[in-house]
Image (cartoon, rainbow, N blue to C red):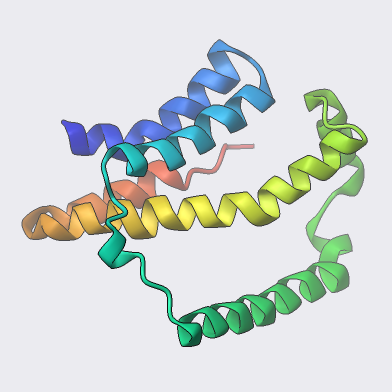
Length: 153
């Protein structure tokens, strides 16, 4: 039961934020609070596992930079085919992200989101699922199915 709660917890936080509180900023706080809080409360970061070598840091910075260039360059090159800028602008205004709040949203999505999601899903949850070897295939499938969902249009 605890594992199921950990798997669906982020979705529950999004549901509470969007449908109960009906506030996008509260949704972000609940979602990222869960992604950070669950591993911290679960003592997922023992000091012996948190060692960082210069080689690992350099590799992370270089690979992150390369992928950033490809993603950023691809979006600059293909944004007119991939994004409806007017609809996005209207959605941001509807959600209250105007001016400085818009810049804060971009920073959160570019810096905070990838780090917290990697820590939670790839670090914390993957380790928990891997330790339950018989259930790992089912657990990973549930994890992917619960987290990645498209709304029908």
